[in-house]
Length: 125
Image (cartoon, rainbow, N blue to C red; front, side, top):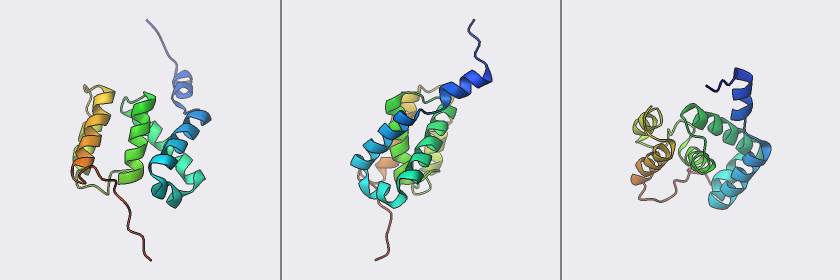
């Protein structure tokens, strides 16, 4: 039986800077308007918080974490910009669904209301 101590688990779960940077670069290409509103420091902080959220819900693959960060950037840290907020959390908190399926189902649920279009925040002129 393998035993992992709390300190070891924390080290495994902390996101390396290069991984955070890669996700930030992908988001800059994919959702530039969202990224511009935050600035580099806040974007990196959001990525780190979302990676932690993913880990807490069993999501550890880079692709799943990247997609989760994109969803959080677009729909809010608590998915508050989506009427499907409750359903998204129900899926994330599901204990038996595989991680990749959770992210895919949350993505489908949140994007269903927008017809697949990217949600943009209203910006006063």
